[in-house]
Length: 224
Image 1 (cartoon, one colour):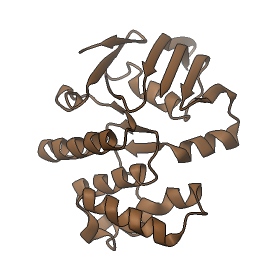
Image 2 (cartoon, rainbow, N blue to C red; image 1 turned 90 degrees about the vertical axis):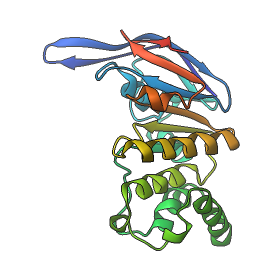
Image 3 (tube, rainbow, N blue to C red; image 1 turned 45 degrees about the vertical axis):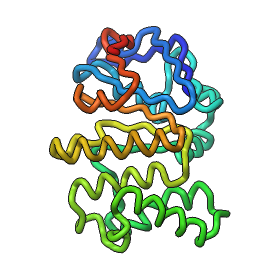
Image 4 (tube, rainbow, N blue to C red; image 1 turned 180 degrees about the horizontal axis):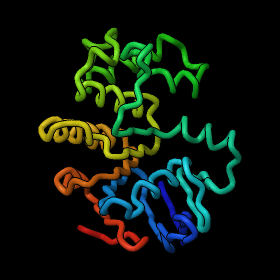
């Protein structure tokens, strides 16, 4: 569940203040999936980073899974970010860890009380769904771009978050692999009733989402 009310965000460019988000409202129920379109600089990534607790809202209210982000201190925001799922364009895998350890890394930080046996079972199941079960012992530099993005998706979903934020998650992949990864991501989130919010420049990829909105003039406009 995501609720945004009267959100504002600006940044300074030289001596001038530029308004990026102006009185934006958004409401997503549990499990809803949203694609955010918009030109470069329109503010869609800024909005995603605010919802992910990576940027502060300067005015307005942002509530994700009953957490009011403006009320969180640094420690609480760090805990919040570990509980959600995050997928980036550049994968952000740890080169010193193999695939299995990369997938489990953040989950171990978030839930150290969960047994190694339970994590191993969950890892195997997720890896099989994403077609990377045979690569669990490999290291990031041994993987193709498509395999690395599947690892990043597994890492974001392994702990069954309530919401996943994805920023151009297929930007480094060719068209065919982009479509394959997008189909997997949206289907897995649908199966687990996970909110998925994705920033993309691609209208073709956005078509995988039941809800598409475009950032324009600091506001969200419905596309479908």
